[in-house]
Image 1: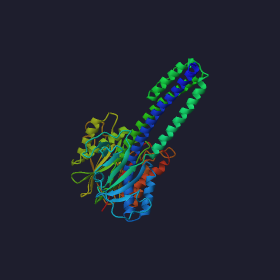
Image 2 (image 1 turned 120 degrees about the horizontal axis):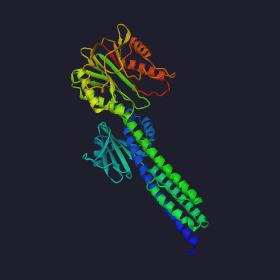
Image 3 (image 1 turned 135 degrees about the vertical axis):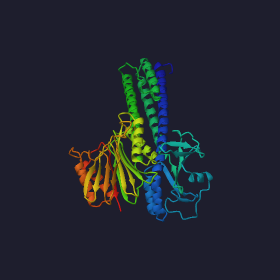
Image 4 (image 1 turned 120 degrees about the vertical axis):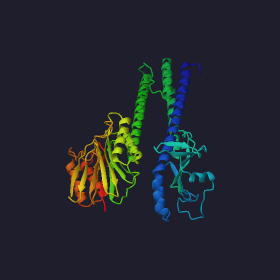
Length: 526
């Protein structure tokens, strides 16, 4: 029986197919397990960071006053967004368990006070950083740097290695406001189900392949053994990630067709892998640029005795280079600026970040001309000749109700005179930052005395140059009319800002705009 060439070939070829399926299947299962494990780790960490505020807000609004049902409804809706979170609990800084979704799945807990007994758990509750407990027992803390990058540290804040793509998370503890902590338990049941399904599919495919091999091998001759060996060799290379490998088979029978299919698969895998890497890189760059742009904007409303201020930015479909901020100077004055970097994308966001950081660093300067000149020196020295930034920059003295203004190549600000009830453009000589080394003879400060209900509007060119549904620009005439109407109606600075932005967005309609639309409004008060 075993002396038959066909029998030997059948057994050998059948064994080869089984081995091939096992190798490729094992590689695919391992790769899939690592991919899914890494995806779950990334998604649950991001989910815990984004959901902490919502959980605590719901706790303060509902559970703390005793309204359990709306709190449970909010929590259930939140947990449905990420099926990898098994349940969560809320603990006070002193270690009292305020809520546990397992114990309180049906009704609110009304027993004795629950406390965290384990000292390690209490240390995590009272920590300054989010902590991750791995299934290996290792405890890692997540430290966020000022630039939003992440360092993984131990309890002594010594840097440790980041979790590998094989590591599984048991739970994540996120401290909140130095008074509470939320514990999220991670569930890997879906991962196991998907891996189980993948194993079943591989086994079924292996069995089907083996049966077909046994049937077809009796009709094949010894001449196909060499092409099969070549196919095996290439498959192993592909399984190791060499997507440039190709099968060199010249036969036109089924083996030849299989070889052609294999080559097409390898080619498609190579193309899709390169496309995915490129897409992920571009996406991460755009996300980083967008994050930088948002971080430049003031987060809190500024309250001054004699000035009302509001600002807003409608981002473009592309990442733009607009930025504005309110900065308190060391001498008690306030600096308000609106800047616009040439171009779009990551480069524009970086230059905006440089300008914003420099302005914070110049808070001890007493003269507006010194601020603009020193900022120009940095932009000129640290950027290329093709990159520059225009800026409208003001110093406000709240006691004297005076505004000092310089224009660095930016569109002229609008001034609404409450007495004349008229809007005019404040024209001023200026040049964009980054063009020349010295702006002393080019940019001259100008003073404006702000009366009650006087309004100054700083804006980017994305406002008047916005393209409407018919392909026409928004224009300065319409812009001035909106500001004048809002000023006549005694709108607040926030109201004027909203009126301008809503009118521009309505004018654009559903079209995508290529430039940021930014407005900063200053209005005199009593």
